[in-house]
Image 1 (cartoon, rainbow, N blue to C red):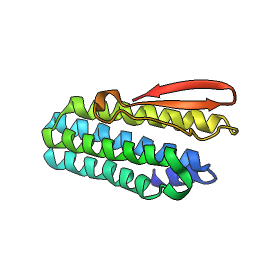
Image 2 (cartoon, rainbow, N blue to C red):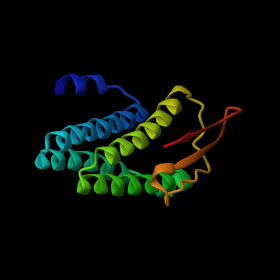
Image 3 (cartoon, rainbow, N blue to C red):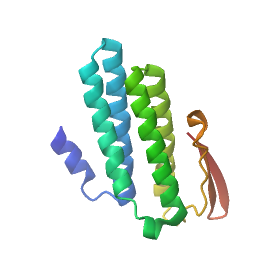
Length: 152
């Protein structure tokens, strides 16, 4: 199975690789939920660690010197989602894990949209409301004459 995944990612674009990492976070968070439902604290911790390792990897690869405000916004998102997953794990809360999955899925979907438009310009201004984790919101600046927004 791992060799299939490796083969599937050969020749993938940078955005496709980022989307695959987000898919990994989501997969591990679902594993954490399954562990919570089984009462398996060790399984929950292993799944959470794997999801957090991906988040740490993504954050470490941000190029703040090149990415400007969008990179800063992603950094803030990674910090917020890391904290949210930690709280979900500490309380063994299926609901909190589900919310984290929704947030990650929304950002992953924004990356997918960016992958569809080769002329997409990185958003120059994204604002997150990190004080209320349930309403993380970002506005995408206009690209190719259209505007859209996404929420996590």
